[in-house]
Length: 82
Image (tube, rainbow, N blue to C red; front, side, top):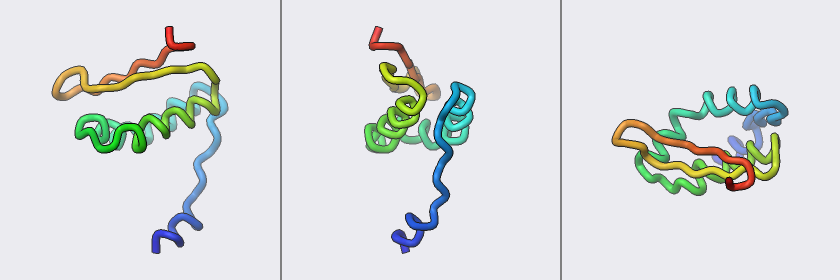
């Protein structure tokens, strides 16, 4: 069954603008929050996806994430790791 889901899954549109990126992020923000808060394989379920989308928009972006407090996740994006 998962093979059929993969075949017929709608491909996400390529990120071409910052607006596209933030629309994509907003669509996935609740899932990302859950991944970060519960430490559910953060690299695979969040960072790799974020990296792929940012890479479509611009090279040289670095980021880190974690819980700011018990209710707020934090995402920091920086150019060239500065």
